[in-house]
Image 1 (cartoon, rainbow, N blue to C red):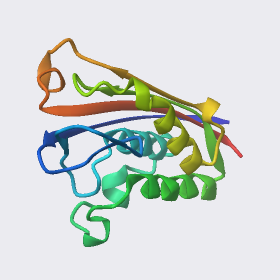
Image 2: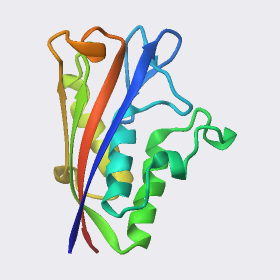
Image 3: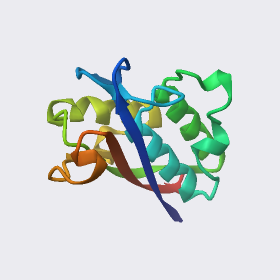
Length: 158
């Protein structure tokens, strides 16, 4: 039996924060604003995994008003989500994801992101797809106000 889940996340770009996407630190003059490290890609992936098992979303699991998660490393949170998936008798079949931003260019960091996500999910990197695209300067991502990510997870019985 397989289960499919979709996740979406968005964060505003601001000065004075590191830019962390897919667990990789990306050199850029701005970072993403959020309670944790605001890793938009990992947040979308976690929501897709939780959604596949109808377990809610990361806001339910890691509330943004809980000081325990202030500045949290989202890769560590993904490890916890993967444990929950395993406790429910599933494992990652594959994950397909897309990061949407005008700048910075992410191509050189994609393999690092894939490895970080695969390691956290205890699966082979061949099961993890990360893509990046722009929106041709349209909308909040195109104007550089923020970054968005979509993810689809297929979980299979372990």
